[in-house]
Length: 345
Ligand SMILES: Cc1cc2nc3c(=O)[nH]c(=O)nc-3n(C[C@H](O)[C@H](O)[C@H](O)COP(=O)(O)OP(=O)(O)OC[C@H]3O[C@@H](n4cnc5c(N)ncnc54)[C@H](O)[C@@H]3O)c2cc1C
Ligand code: SF4
Image (cartoon, rainbow, N blue to C red):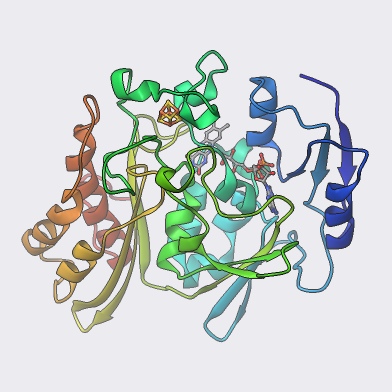
């Protein structure tokens, strides 16, 4: 790892000016530093300045620490980009008014990681594809000419593609939080780009057909300050994992519903770990309308649509079936219906 300068920015102005400082040739923002330092250790990136943005304060910023960094005004929830996943998981406001976000944050990684990882860093973390993460493989995402996952080990890769044909890169989006924020209609607030200050969460990410070497639409020097989103008190998350801690999910689903009496009046469903971006499932959302979440047969039928359009690779066809189960259980979690065998979990 090369040497670098560490800058602790105290406010937005310091963060932005440090990034433009001519004495640095490759300065980068740093949240908790978990993904960034992993990249540096693997030799995938060699910044000469890390601008720590966890202390950024100022107009439009929230504190980012304290027992509950989350504010709620009317139906709008607001929290700082530097809030940790642990704070999100434990926030009384999120647990009550957007449980899908608290559950999703609380299920990511390990307690040690959650205590350090920030919301912005989680959204912007790079993919987990093992060819990408290994400096020995110069794949398409790193400017090479091949996607090694096509002929290689692709058990954890995408089953849906964002372009008209699968590829060119088959990553799954790594963030747990992104699909949860999508079902809450979140907006990402930024500084550092004169032309825009707000990005709807769905527009923060792009598929590989729109640029294979990056996953998000932020420009260099654009700093995420905070997130706003709508309250979704009836919402839930379900992940299927090989192991319950220290691992990313095989598939997961985030669901927000509005009940009309005993039945679902409206639903939003977004899946994770199945596509290069958080993957909205509008057909499932439409099929859920009118379903009583306690009616297991009707629920299973609606959620079976989750895998429609999937084009699995050689080793990841198992994700198609798992996805329907994850969506069904996320709806049950949201609606407070017990899942057999998971009482007390
Ligand atoms: C063992 C393990 C298991 C894990 N399991 C999961 C899991 O199940 N689900 C999951 O979602 N994640 C998981 N992770 C990943 C972890 O959650 C991320 O690495 C972490 O959230 C990154 O956050 P950070 O604050 O450390 O980001 P950093 O590493 O500091 O930054 C990541 C990127 O975001 C940029 N950045 C940071 N803050 C800002 C900002 N305010 N504005 C603009 N750019 C910014 C940085 O420049 C960098 O490019 C796991 C990690 C480990 C080690
Ligand atoms: S899936 Fe993407 S990141 Fe992985 S090897 Fe292929 S091009 Fe590289």
